[in-house]
Length: 121
Image 1 (cartoon, rainbow, N blue to C red):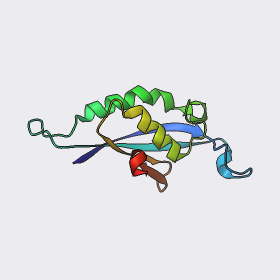
Image 2 (cartoon, helix red, strand yellow; image 1 turned 135 degrees about the vertical axis):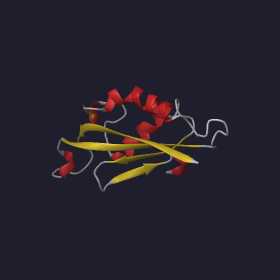
Image 3 (cartoon, rainbow, N blue to C red; image 1 turned 60 degrees about the vertical axis):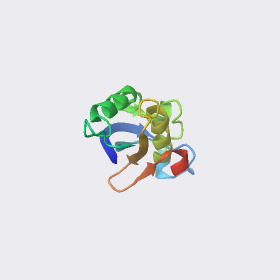
């Protein structure tokens, strides 16, 4: 079974490695929608995979690092593409959520990425 918890952050960024003149090279912001998935068996007594509160607590620990920030200023996010943000989130959340199975980052309503750790691309 796979469950998810969704949260949003407001953040600015710019992409330093795109060509001069590319619109994403300029500082701009997004309302990022982030989805954190955890998978595993359903506990027969509790009836859940993991408490949604445990997922929220893990997210809270890192939320201040990225919410209402310029992502380029965050260590490890110097080139803050959606893909790099997903990998950064994975590394930060995995210690608290060992059953982490996927992270989705929505940069806009129609664009984003899905990351399943190094084995899942």
